[in-house]
Length: 208
Image 1 (tube, helix red, strand yellow):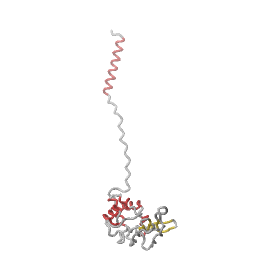
Image 2 (cartoon, rainbow, N blue to C red; image 1 turned 90 degrees about the horizontal axis):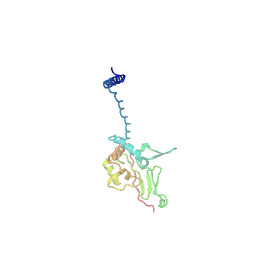
Image 3 (spheres, rainbow, N blue to C red; image 1 turned 135 degrees about the vertical axis):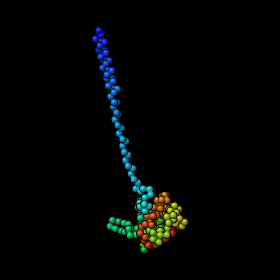
Image 4 (tube, rainbow, N blue to C red; image 1 turned 180 degrees about the horizontal axis):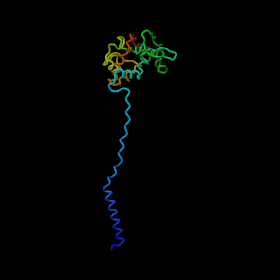
């Protein structure tokens, strides 16, 4: 006859064996599914996409560069000066006379530059300069090509080979633009309304 201790051990062994068998038969629990990676926010589109309409690109650059500040005549309104949109980018008005500055008006210790109401005529140590007609009229850029325009901005010479481009025209800054950007500016200038306006030639310095 078996002793009670032996019977108890045998019983426990049978129970553990049965539990192990059931555990082996039960399917293993699947790990929780990994969460899909969070979607990246869409990149902001640049103001002008590569290959965009060059006229639109050119307008953007002309407005940003403030070309109308000097190249568009102004209207005097109750709120101050405003651009005359009917003469957009047509340069110094041919019917607005500008007298040579008085001798001694400018000096290293005093005023070094002055302008008229339209901001189209400027006087300084370089003499008197007048903002050019940038419209596609024959009196403006009508005969120019984009390569002529680029050569002018790169060299600081009229049409790339002529007289110096005088202050306050910031040709150095424009010359730092890419060919594509300069072509876009020229494309926009060729798209504006032609305005017949013969801008006077610069006056040589006589300020001493």
